[in-house]
Image 1 (cartoon, rainbow over the protein chains, first blue to last red):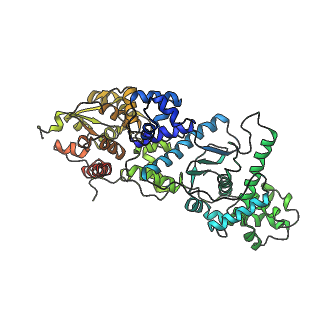
Image 2: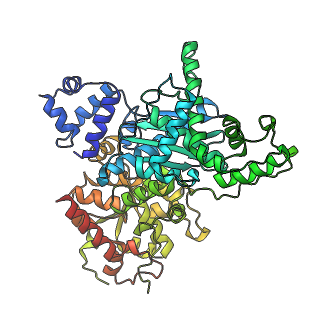
Image 3: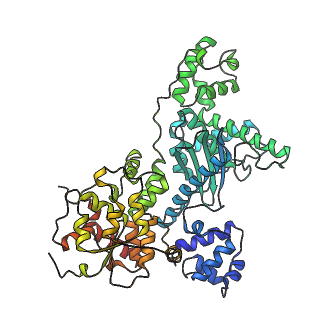
Amino acid sequence: MSEQVGRRLKTIRQSKGLSQTEMQKALGASSIQEVEDLEAGLRELTEEQFDVALEILNVSFEEFANPYMLVGEERFSWRRSEPAAHELDAFENTAKEWIGAYRELGVQLGEEPSRTLPGTGLHIDSSTADAKAASEAIAHELRLGSVPADRLAEAIQRDFGVLVIPVDAIPGISGAACTLPHLNVALINRNESEGRRNFDLAHELFHLLTWNTMPPARIDGECERSDETRSRADELEKIERLADAFAASLLMPTAVLRKTEPPESIREMPKWLADTSATLKVSRQALKWRLVDLHMGPAGLRDLEFGRKSGIQMHDRAEKPAPFGTVFISRIGEGIARGYISNRRAAALLNIDLDQMGAIFDANSVERPSMLSGRLLNAA
Amino acid sequence: MSKSSPLREMPILVDTNLIIHAHKTGCWRKLSGAYRLETVRKCVEETQTGFWNRALANRIVEAELKARVRVHDVSEKQQRIIVLKGGGGLHEGERHLWAHLVEREKPWRMCGPDGASLRFGCELGHKHELVSMEKLLIEINEKPPKNMEYHYGEGWHCDMTLSHTLQTI
């Protein structure tokens, strides 16, 4: 039996909270060793055992058959403003398959699992000052420099093994953090403004770093059940405040802002904010509140409004990141090249036409697998 | 024309990729006229899906396709076997094709130019049943068309099957 099937069996069993002993009894296996051998792909499930396994695991054939679909070992936390629950559920299922494919192909390709994330020392009783201090430590560890937004995505992928996936999310979704055994993921809506994307990424990083001590809600700040207590609701709100404080401090470090010179006149602030936020690749709003937090800037800054009245037109000229990102697409490409996923299966996974597959690789500056190269047999 | 080519004496199972590319390159009629081509219903369905922004001339008419190719159905039981053998990286048509083939008595050949499908076939021990589109054309003394893509050729096919065979040792 393939190792893939064994992995699938083990993953689903663990996610359902079943022991190997329970599986042994259900399958009529002679020993726990037989179950271990099945899960290692050393022994083949009979068709009868497969039927029993589906029943005891309470999964459909289709769910079992898709090795890329996560089955409950993951935790998501979404930043959303609009979409209805059923729209979010559907999008989450799509994201689960992307993440599951990345993980499964990684195992097949023999890639190293993700590194353990560094600790931050933060917990629910931490203050926003603690969160900001932690962010400055992280920024130092990642060597983010004077424009942290520039290097954040690359640095957390390189040094923390966090997978960052820019996606075409449904409207109203800014992003999500997803944690599962041996993999941490940040999904970012590539269609949002640059400043918003960067802030979301820093915010999701906070959740990934602190999940063990401060697990966020599935939807930022919202209780999942109506019977959850007020104290739990307060806790979730606090987690989001800490996340925002962390993100602001990470992207706009105190030392960097102290070197800037906000004008003394409130009338000059809109333009200064526009220019400086563009340099730091954050939103004007985020920069304004960060200055207020640091007691920098002229009097009246807190009450400064943006919009048509400011007379400053903001245009997000930054290019959108390529869909899915280089790291994710590289893995898909390697999987195609080594025969672990077919072209058509990969196209279906990415929800694009097969004809568009080559363009996805080009957009991410990843070499196309040979089947997508367009090379002709009789090319000169 | 190689009238005695053994390939002409046995069924050749073809996947969606082959069907579409043969139509695109204009050699479908020659191949389907010279060989006993067969496929599975899911592959026929896939040739009809609107994924493809194909020019009108390249669209495949289902009735004509079925008139030139024998089409097999695949049971859920057969599909389960493929799942148990680790076909999770294949798309539906590829899985259905292999689901049909694993219970098919030899001789047969399969032409499905995709790396994952070839790998799966090699892992099941069917390396010698896999054949490239270029070989099918050469056997009937047809020159590969100018717009035929490299991975439908014999060179790519041999490289891939050798690589997969070595990895399964």
